[in-house]
Image 1: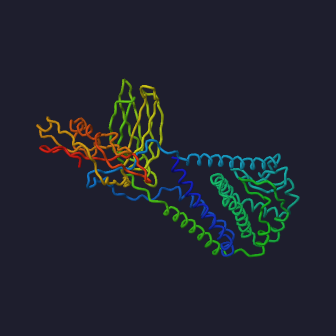
Image 2: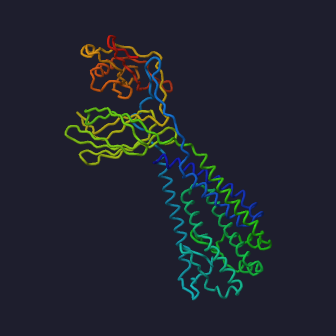
Image 3: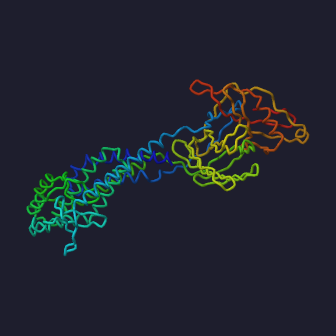
Length: 507
C-alpha cells in the first residue's frame, strides 16, 4: 500500500505540474483566439491527467519463465534477505499526510474567517441573502451556491447594474464554478508541496471570472458601459474564500475592464475553442495513462514457504496463488492451532507486497507486511525469544511468477563433497527419481542449511531418498557468491538424481 501510494503520488505530481505549465502557456493565446471561455475550459487538463494517473495501467500478458538448471547442475539464487529493509517511503508519506492536514486546516480557517466577516445574514424578499458587510460582495458561497448581497446593494447600483451583477452571480451558480473551486482546494491539499499548483490556482480564479464576464456580455451585449461601472463600484475583500466566488483583492479587475473594449468572439468561434480545450484534455489524459508502465497480467504466483513453529515443527509448503486473493493455511504444533492467511499483490519493478494475518488458537498474533522482489527470499516472524526456546512462528518464503523470476547464477566451481548414499531398500525396490534441494551457502562456501523443494522433485517428501540427500548436502562445499566484491550468503538449487543401479549424483 505504501509503495503504491508513493508511486502514484510521484506520478500524479509530475502529471499535474506538466498540465499546469501547459495551461499557463496556452491560456492567453486561447483567450485571444477563442474567448475567455476557452481559456477557462483549458484548466480541465489538470483533473483529466490526475484521473488518468489513477486509472489502471494497460495489462499486457507475460510469458511465465522457469528457473533453468545450469549446465553444472547448480543454480544460484539472489542473496537471502531475512529482514526487510526500512521503507523510508512510509516516513515520506507521513510527512505528506501532515502537510495535507495543515493545508486543509488553513483553507477551512480562511473559509470560516470570511463567513464570520459577513456578520448576520438576512433573507430578502426575493430569496437572496443580504449581509451586514460590503467587502467582496456580491458573492456565491456554500455547497448550495447561495448568492449573498451587500447591505447597500440597492443604493450602490442602479437598476441595470443590479441586473448585470445578479446575472454574473447566476452564471457562477449555473456553471458549477463553486464545485470547480472546491476541486482546486482539494488539489492544493493533495499537492501542498508544489508551489506551481498554488500559483496556478490564482490564475484559474482569474480565468474563471473573465469567462463569467464574457458569458454576461454575450447575454447583454449592449450593456458594456453599465457592466464596467458595476465592476468599478464593487469593493474588493481582503480575505480569500476557498469555497465560493467573490471579489477578492487579487481580482483581475484591470483585465476585466480591458476586455469590455473588445467584442465577444462569434458564437461558432467560442464553441470551437471549447471543443479544442476538451480535445486537449482528452489527449493529455490519454498521454498520461499510456505513459504508465504496463502492468503484468494477473497470472498465478508460486509461493514456497518454510515454517518453523515454536522453534521446531518445521514444515515446507508450496502454493499457487492468484494476485490479490487471500489463501488460508492451518497448522498444529504443541497442542496449539495456527491459522495464517497470506495475500500477494504484484507491484511495479518486479516487487510483490506480502500481507499476512496470523492467529494462534483463534487469537490474533499480528498482521505483518513486507515488500520484496520476485525471486528473492524473505522472511517474517512473530513471537518471543526465551533463553532456551522460541515461541512463535517464523516464515521463510520465496515468491516467483509474473515473468519476474530471478535469473539463475552459475557457480563456476560447482560443488564438492560426498555423494549421497543410495538406501538399500530403495535400490532393491528399483525406486529412484530426482530430489530437488535448496541449500543455503555461507560466506565461506560451506552448506549451512538444506531444504527439500517439492517443485522439481519427483519423489515424495517422506522418501528415504530425500533424507539421504539432505543429510549429505550439509557436507558439501560450494564456491561462495559475492556481492559488491564481498562474500554473501545465498540459496542455491541442487537437483540430486537417484537412478537404480547407479550411485546418487548431484548434477
